[in-house]
Length: 312
Ligand SMILES: Nc1ncnc2c1ncn2[C@@H]1O[C@H](COP(=O)(O)OP(=O)(O)O)[C@@H](O)[C@H]1O
Ligand SMILES: O=P(O)(O)OC[C@H]1O[C@](O)(COP(=O)(O)O)[C@@H](O)[C@@H]1O
Figure 1 (tube, rainbow, N blue to C red):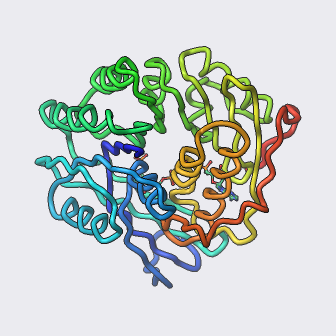
Figure 2: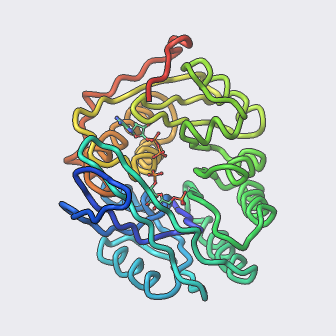
């Protein structure tokens, strides 16, 4: 079982428009409502592919009830911790050329007592989990010290921890010794203070995160694919998508595929890239099912050319 933790989940509303024009009344050609938040998406993707998972989510207010209803309707196994605040709604505007504009709310404040309840739910359930996967932004309220403490307790208890977050939360996961971190290109750049221009820059940045404590670094690079740096060495790969529809949740699907396939080596990276590419071809933050996956398009190579420039 893979335990996902989304400290700041959401109800995601995606609107498809021909062109996004500021200051105009736009008519949406299509719209979708999906349960949202990065760990929630990892659980949805795992479920859609027959991998057991439980999602821990703090929920509150009408949107919190809606989120629980949406997740129950999909059949996601939930550990919902009630909070006083209102679960956020995040908006995505998708254009036909694949351009995605997102507006994410800050989310409800999580009090110290509520964060302690979420932490307890995570630590209690972790004993049954192959991985504990903490994903997404931190809500207002718990400081970075509380988050660091949760990561350290999980690692200290011997659980395999994966962290997919940004800024201080990503660095906290690294410093706590997470077995895996999954930054995207921007998160990696922020973590090392340098914008990568080539595959070699990405590999170097991943090595720095490993030196700072992370066991493995899976850097997702949008259309440029992904790089895996772990104790076994370096792998890079990509999977072309002819008609990108929505990149929302692509990183979450990628991480889910990688974990589902054992989180190690070319096979896991191939699976992650296949799930990520499939998510990009689907509307909103819809997660791929086995029928959506095409592993034949994925190319993974060991020791890639470090001078290769990044495009996306
Ligand atoms: N335009 C694209 N074309 C092909 N694959 C993509 C594209 N955008 C994303 N992906 C796939 O989804 C994965 C995650 O995307 P990325 O944007 O890096 O992550 P995040 O969603 O976390 O920001 C990538 O590693 C890649 O496999
Ligand atoms: O916690 P954050 O960083 O605000 O992100 C939350 C958003 O991320 C998502 O999980 C999508 O993730 P990505 O598009 O970054 O892969 C949405 O479902 C959600 O609205």
